[in-house]
Amino acid sequence: MFRKILIANRGEIALRIIWACRELGIKTVAIYSTADADSLHVRFADEEVCIGPPRNQDSYLNVSAVISAAEITDAEAVHPGYGFLAESAHFAEVCRECGLTFIGPEPDVIRKMGDKAVARSTMMEAGVPTIPGSEGILDGPEHAAEIAEKIGYPVLIKASAGGGGRGMRIANDADELERMYNAATAEAGAAFGNAEVYLEKYLKNPRHIEFQVLGDTHGNIVHLFERECSIQRRHQKLVEESPSVALDDDLRARMAEAAIKAARAVDYVNAGTIEFLLDEDKNFYFIEMNTRIQVEHPVTELVTGIDIIKEMVRVAAGEPISVTQDEIVSRGHAIECRVNAEHPETFVPSPGKITTFHSPGGPGIRIDTHCHGDATIPPFYDSMIAKVIAYGGTRGEAILRMRRAMESFVIEGIHTNVALQRKIVSDEDFVRGRMSTAFMERFLEKKG
Image 1 (tube, helix red, strand yellow):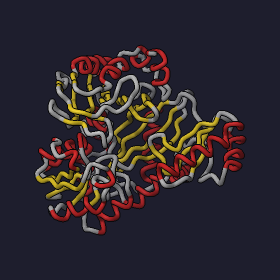
Image 2: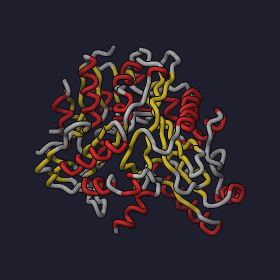
Image 3: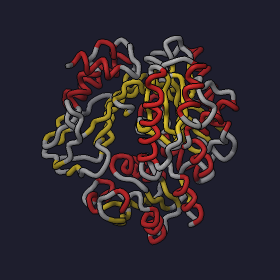
Image 4: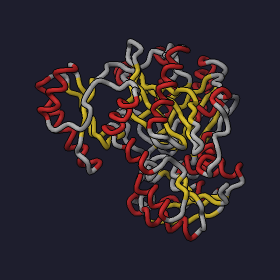
């Protein structure tokens, strides 16, 4: 087992990794920008290193600075968390070249799954269901039109190197296709330095279902059941839960089998997520694999009792996964709401100083956050400031506990989406499990 791990991240996920390492008896090193000098992850790590000014490119994305911090503190491994360098094959390679263990999958797997077109073709070859569309990168708008005519409109043009909804456009008919193709390639080139796109059939009102997987260097691959992440705004998740009310035992088993097949297709090691879309006829399709820990991992931890961060560390140290598939059982229901520092009406980020921070508690409530009553939220990073996770014996109990949590969560000094989340979990469609990726659009229309 490692003696010391450097955490190449900030905020709540850095704290989450610190707590897991502390329980494993491992020392931790925090890195921070000057904007995060007073952050809790800096306070609670065993050592800390300032790696630069606030701008991402000068600090958390500065590979040389991160590696230097690991070397001067004699860290043996690096945990990237999510975001920043977590899905950088280059960073994983540099860690290896410098004698550091990257706590995540192999660089080649990160690169392959990070290219959405390559990931799609890989899964097609493995027999994992994929959405009808192009087999690879589009040669141009004429190529897109040829495929669209075969599979039918509407179609979705997606950036091969994309994420977060960037480089993605819907074309409802042939008249729109060329314009949407040009818009998608332009945005993809600007956002990712890669203008390549591919095409898929656009599914109306699908549900977003993902399966957590773990693999080790001994050839073991297991799944930790599913999470539903259908409640999204502009492809950014807001509410996640496990299990999904849309799955019965047979469908769950078939999707789990496909998730394992997908992970085996790339000899996956460490924690990852296989993401599917489920259409209104209960057909499911692979859309992508996230080669890192997910923001929503706590809901899986609560229903399975498995500490995914600890498993990541153990696997990276060469140990086998601590449980077999037969030993993994999902019990009860968990829901996670992301609390963001943003205006609840305009969704504009709301950085600033928190003057009051009263986090909820009571039975079945878990709070993952780096914030407190004297914290300053800098304007340079993601707006998520807390995750509230409610657990209950049933979905109904989890919903009631989440409502209670949102009613008692007090954050002053900045705008947050706490009130919005309270309304979402009280919405009749949510309560009845009537969800799709179009939920927020309809919800905001009703609210307006």
